[in-house]
Length: 110
Image (cartoon, rainbow, N blue to C red):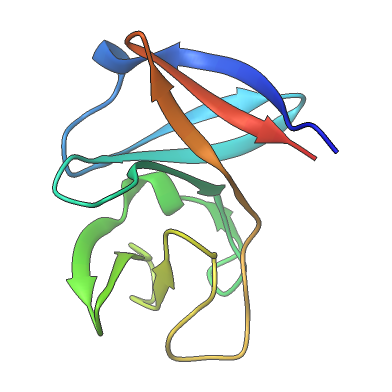
């Protein structure tokens, strides 16, 4: 099965070490540009399932337990950027494969 990639934004729209929100196919997605990581870019759902608000893009990015994570700005749970899995609770946010190509950020649509 071939992945279908969707152009979301330019690399210049991203902020190093922080998140930005984007609307993709009617869903809010939090995009993170972490040049220190192997993957460089990540895409997870912007909806915080604990705080019940679209705020994940405003969270703090950190390297914790050998994973790149974002801390929810509301109740501070840490979500792994590569998988959406919460480190403190048995919950998960959606995640998408993301890539930078020719200064464009793409995410894989399922």
